[in-house]
Amino acid sequence: MDWVFEQENMDWAALSHLYKIAPLGDKHPDDLKTAFTNSMFTCFVFDGGILAGAGRALADGIDCSYICDVAIHPDFQGQGLGKAIIGKLRDLSAGHKKIILYAVPGKEGFYKKLGFKRMSTAMAIFKDQERALAAGLVNDA
Image (cartoon, rainbow, N blue to C red; front, side, top):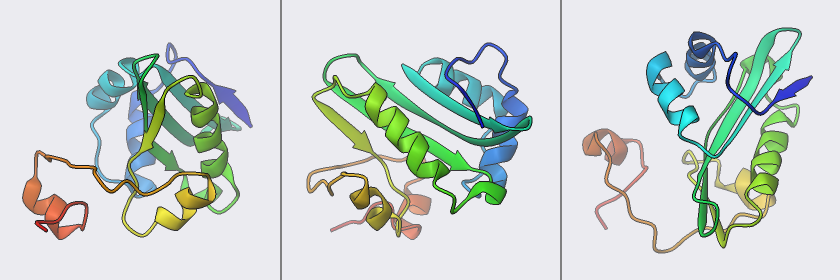
């Protein structure tokens, strides 16, 4: 597998396709380009020219690094690639006072094994609050 940490030659349509089949939703190629370009750390993993996995960390260099958008191609799921990408982004973020990760409901146990702890004070405002409530991402309690 080839690990790439820069974005110059990234095929944003291929990355968009990865999120769709992962399945982590529809993310427009231009939106992904903006999000990844504005992130301090990025990680793309290729296997024989196939985009097998990707992830990024939005970080400020001192206080906070937020690991997000980790996606693994279905053909490579269950092989430790997600764990490896999270580990690499965590290592790149190591100088920060805190590393935050936003998990899909039901995946908390996976991240706990990687050293992450549940936050009791996290709050969020989503563009589509109703969808976030329905998906269990937030609650009214």
